[in-house]
Length: 322
Image 1: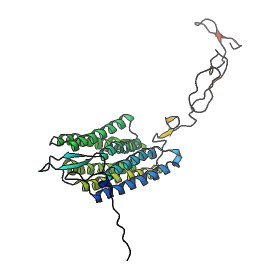
Image 2: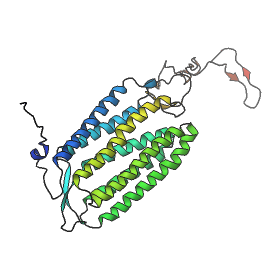
Image 3: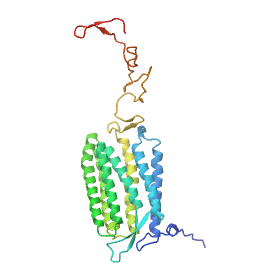
Image 4: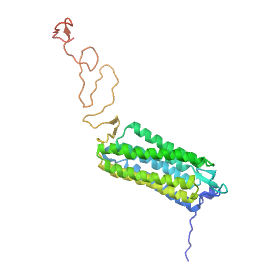
C-alpha cells in the first residue's frame, strides 16, 4: 500500500496569524501563495521579453514589471499571514475582530498608477492629465484604506470620498482618453483595454463594499475575490498591452523614449549636448554640422565678410575676412 504524503501549509501557524473572529484560513493562504506564484512567473516573463522588445521600445515592459514585482511581494506577505491589522467591525452585532490585510492596499497604490499610466500613454493625453489620474487613484486607495481601518460607522464617509475619486477617474479615462486615442488611430484598442480596466474597477468597488467595508464576506472569501481581480488587472493586462503594442506606431504615439529623452519621430540623430569651449563643434538634429570658422574666435560662427561704412548708408564689403 502506497504512502500518501499530505502537504500542509504551516505559514499561518508559524506567524501566529489565526487571530480575531474573522481571520485567514489555511486554504485561503494556499490560494494566496498560488496568486504569488502567478505574479512571479508573469514578472519573469515580462522582464525576459523586455530584452528583445519591438524596435527597442520598453516603456510598457518597464511599467508592468514594476507592478508585477510589487504584486509578488504583497501577495507573499498576505499568504504568509503578515501585512494585516486587527480591526473591530462596526457592522457586526458583537463588534467582531477582523483581519484587514493592508498589503493589498499598498499594492494598489503602485498597480493602479501603472495601469493608468499605460492607458494614458496609449491615448496620448497630456502629462497634466496623467498626473491628475494618478492622484485620483491614490485618493481612491487611501480613502478605502481609511475606511477599512475605521471601527465606527464614520467609515462610510471615507467610502464616499474614495468612490467619488473612482467615478472621476473612470469618467475621464472613458471620455478624454478615448478622444485622444481617436486622434492617434488606436481608439479600438484603447476602448477595449480601458473598458476592461473600468469594468474591473467597478468590481473592486463592489467587492470592497461587501468585504472590508461592509463585513458581508469573510476574510478567506475576500482574499479570493481580490486575488482574482488583481490577476486580471495586472498580469492579464500586461500581456495584452505587450501583444497589442506590436501593432502601434510609436512615432505617432510620441513614445520614442531614447537615451536623449522622449523625442518626436523625425530624421536625424539626437546627440548629447557638447560642453561649450574652444574647438567644440556641434551638429543639429538632422546631422548637419554647424558652421566653423574664424569669425570672432567663437566656434560655430561663420567667416562671412565683414562690412564697413555708416549704418545708415550702403555698406561696402571688405573682401578679406576679419
